[in-house]
Length: 149
Image (cartoon, rainbow, N blue to C red; front, side):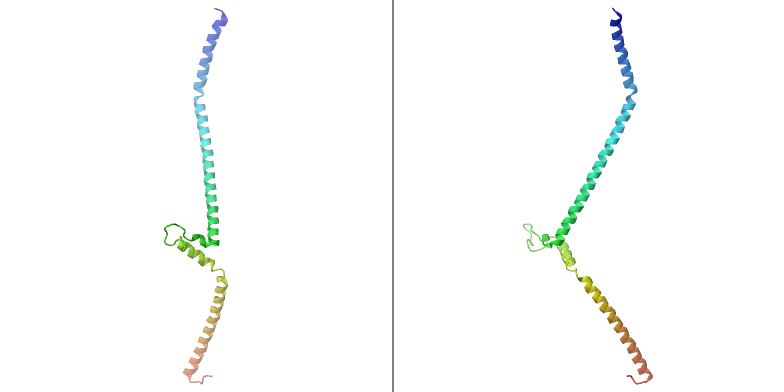
């Protein structure tokens, strides 16, 4: 047996022992790295899920507002078209919503009417106060026996 034939099996055994020792000593580092990678991937997945949920809510809000705007513009969309409904084609499916929308749409010029009525009320209040003052003066004059003009 030559020295080379003896060296290779011993070197193989030594390398395998060294590899096993490295594998055994690096096990906590590998587990720590796996845990960190898992935490990072979970955090990234959570951020993606939150982003999707936020986008879903924003899209739902936009669709809802556009639908409400369309319903307000054309309240006839609320007419009941369901088969078997007693109000089919004539009544509103969401009666209270339709009534509310129609009332609000018909109140466009109510601000001017309300301000006019407020001014009218103020003038009438002034007139009532003047009449009451005149009535008091007349009552005083009648009590004193003076002639009333």
